[in-house]
Length: 273
Image (cartoon, rainbow, N blue to C red; front, side, top):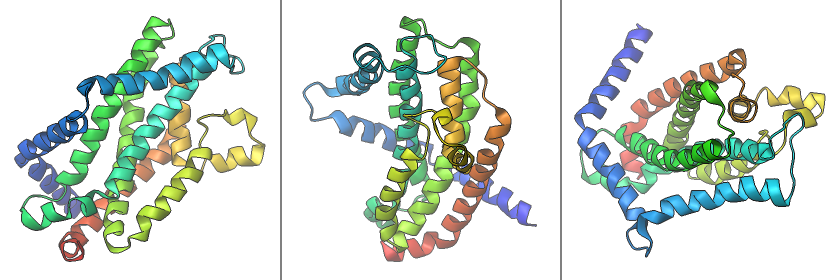
């Protein structure tokens, strides 16, 4: 009976999104255009900003600071290690941070227009995904030009990225609903993110940590995802799929709980906004 309810809920959500696909696509396009509308260089900023970041992380760290990874032969290895972690972590934080405020920021829209509320988190994810695709595309261009493209193992990025998106959506919807009723959630999560970043092996390697900390790191869902990305891009190795099983299950559980929470409180949220 419960499974039937979950399936019906998912089918309704997918049906609503398809029926309002024009609204979703139009909202994504308007937000993307609005971001660069009043700037002199316009859309060029969407290339210049991520390009500057990649240059800083790869060329400057490798050539000027001579940062090196153990057992890595490429002079760009540490820069690629940093980019693999920072770019995907940035995508995660952008999705979750924006989703936790999505209902508050669109309060007037929710009160005045009748549309499926589930469209708002999807618009947020698509906007963040568009930004990530641009910066990640530039990163791939750098890997190709510098001779560091990992080859066929690159395909492993697809399932790893899908798991991360599921995890981000589930967590983001839960925080978004809770933030409507408890406004401290948004402030608190900003602090949590700072500790979470340094508890994830993005700027350091797992092997440099004491054994006890390495064991604790297994409790961090983002750690296994970031390590998988770094393995693909730095070493050209396939992810350890068994290490990704816990975060996959957690992601599915968060999505299920988030949708249940959203369905139960969608009506009450209008009164709170």
